[in-house]
Image (tube, rainbow, N blue to C red; front, side, top):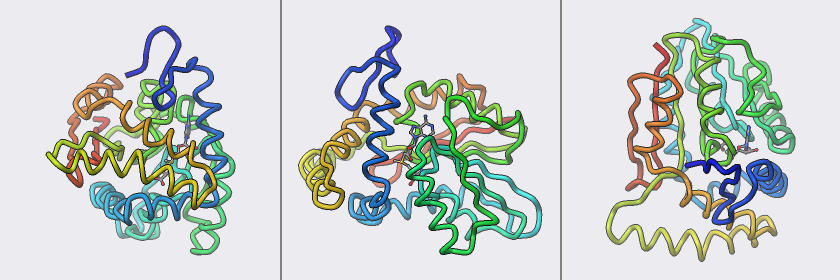
Length: 253
Ligand code: SAM
């Protein structure tokens, strides 16, 4: 949970609230080119299954009916591409991210997939989205919310830009509560991932931050409460892979 004395967590470190975004931006600047490869290595490919479960829940129309998705902190566009693959020709996705390096990798991927007309990339801050009220049929955020300094502002923005009847879906790392798996997961997170990050991106520290930030993120029930506080209704969450990840959902009704 964010602290009230204008400091917040950057992994296990306490930093002034205003500094967190700069530090987070450095992390993603450093890893952008190899971000997708690292996702596969770190999760043994599981992030694909977690994202596919989000897309199933999103259930975009498979016909020409217009459907506008905003993928917040969408990085290199993975969620938007998967949604486009499951949707019909009426589907449009906007990927919004604060980091120009992640977006430029995403734009190249869109061109390679011939999806540049269906998936567009916009630089922006999740805490202050530059989109009108009630302009999207769905808003998603995958593994991004824990990097945002003021989570409450980001949730309020995800609500504001959503049309009534629209759904918010959020994937985020969660709390492993399966005996045995928790110790294995700790060992993998703190011993293996930073070394893997060093080998693949030349940057162990960024991955050290990423695993620490997972432990500092609110527990699923507390995060669900924050989603409710932003105005969402029918809020629910589902633990995936023994609680490594949770899929959170809320509706604007
Ligand atoms: N959603 C993508 C995925 O699942 O592959 C990328 C997730 S990546 C772990 C986190 C992303 O959050 C990074 O691309 C980072 O630039 C972005 N981010 C961090 N702070 C942000 C902010 N305040 N506003 C928008 N994006 C932000």
